[in-house]
Structures are given as structure tokens and as C-alpha cells.
Image 1 (spheres, rainbow, N blue to C red):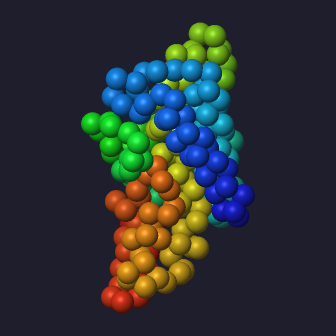
Image 2 (cartoon, rainbow, N blue to C red):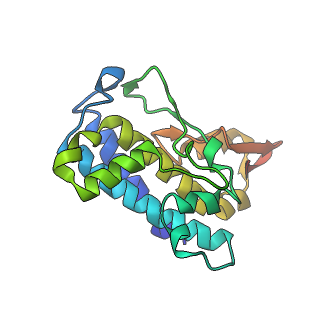
Length: 201
């Protein structure tokens, strides 16, 4: 199932990284907005919706209510199985100079009263009134949306990632190969001696 989502994330990440060669990814530019960033935000958030619904189907055998198939209701249900609100990725893209490199995209989610993350609110605003909300299509929101999509995609791949074993000398490289933008090692742990496995926590 994850194979339907992973290539889309990789393509979005590639396009975002390419954009950083036109507009530097630095603190002063986090509020920079553009039509290109608007397109990336719309696509990334649509993918987040789809990936989150698929993940919920994988995790929960019971049929969700209609409100649980949309943000933020999806957050309530997913957080019953995964502590998404505290999952952090580190920005490792070499062509950036941000002072804050930790991204926690689902911080607004919890077990019972999830709210929409700010990047998702920006997406909703853009979707319903692009003219009034175009400035919300900024670097910060796109970066956070991509971090959210990356985390959801990793969770869709959980069984695949945990099932393999890797020689210790190659383990860190395998983990780094999942993204050139983000490092997920805060919640994917490498365990073992000469041969290692990856464990989600």
C-alpha cells in the first residue's frame, strides 16, 4: 500500500529542494510566499489527507465515523495508536541556514480534542479562497506540511522498514536514504550488533 504514496512524497520533496536554489531557505525567508509554494502546499496537504485515511484503515479494524475521516478528527483516531503529536523530524537539507531545525508537524493533535495544525489551516484557507489567503502559502507552512507527509509515509511503511535487517556499517545510511530533507531518527531507532533492525518508537 505504501508504494502508492512514497513516490508522490519523494517528488514533492525533490521539487521543494529545487525551489531552495531559487529562494534561500533561511530564517528571513520563512514568510516568503509564491504561487509555486501554493502549489506545493495544496499537493502536500491533499496527500496528507489521503495518507492519514489509509493509515487509519491499516491501524483500526472498526469503521470510522464520517467526522473521523477528515482533519482534525483523523488526529483523534490516529493518536489512539500512534503518539503523532510528539513526533519530530530534524531538517538536514544541506542548502539551508535555519536556526530552528526541529519540525513537529502534528503538535496540535491528541487523543480527543485535536485541532488543525497551522499548515493545514493555511491549506484550507487557500483551498476555499486563494486570493485572500495566498500569503499563507509560505516556506514555513510548506516545510511543516512536507514534514507531516514524511512522517505519515514512514508510518505507512512501518512493517516494511521494521522487517529488514542491515549490517551495522550501512544502517545509518539506510535511515538517511529515506529523505534528503528530514532525519527521522528521533522516532526510528537502530538496534542490534553487527546486524541491525529499525524499530519505531
